[in-house]
Image 1 (cartoon, one colour):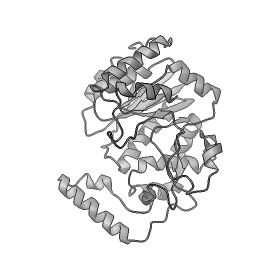
Image 2 (cartoon, rainbow, N blue to C red; image 1 turned 30 degrees about the vertical axis):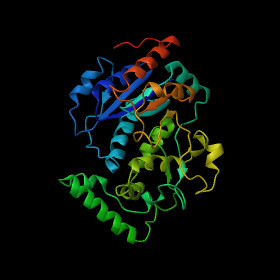
Image 3 (cartoon, rainbow, N blue to C red; image 1 turned 90 degrees about the vertical axis):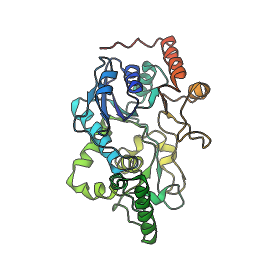
Image 4 (cartoon, helix red, strand yellow; image 1 turned 45 degrees about the vertical axis):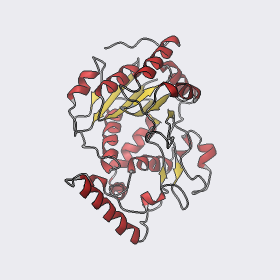
Length: 315
């Protein structure tokens, strides 16, 4: 079982290094994209000898913009062309594994064509459907010189877009949305790369350049409109529902995330979250902080070792 981890990071290089060492194992390849707005050197130093292939033509990533999709595609293309992988797992630099590597391998080996990606159809009455019906240009806003003017530009586009007719989505496709935390088969990864590189799908790429938080929609829509849709976890339950029947994404992925509105967005996990994480049955979690989450990260490492997780080496 060959697994590729694709890590998108921009801050906390020490946590990035800890994550790399935590997922490093036999038959595992690790690929990383570091936001081009930040110095890559501390991230390279933090891996402490663990083999990591870094994206060289980096993207300046802006939250919610198409640049996030571009950076993810850089990782997906690099991983797909570097080697043949059975599974490719996308992580942020603030993620961390909850369970031993051998348990993940057991899960994936038990259903070798199944992929894990949250999804729901964006249709009338669903949460965030306006994201594909209104215009948004987060990458352009990022170029405006001050925070105040960024807000003005965003507000102006929203007000104009709200007065325009709803945008028509790409012909013959149903949009889907879900978390960016996913685990897909090598076949699906190759399908996505081929879809993006095909000139026939240029309208699809052009449409998403003006979509808010398009990283949560771009990949789900390709997969759910592909021959691989039925291989997604929970597709037999949720994939047969009519568009609009599910108001928000299902929980088909391998990630634990706490969206409690009384905490951060999402919650920064610490020791009080340990029991919930362990009871969730999930294999990864986010969002962690190098300092605030240090104790719970230590505990997670200890738990994996007690469960006979082979000790990771720095080479």
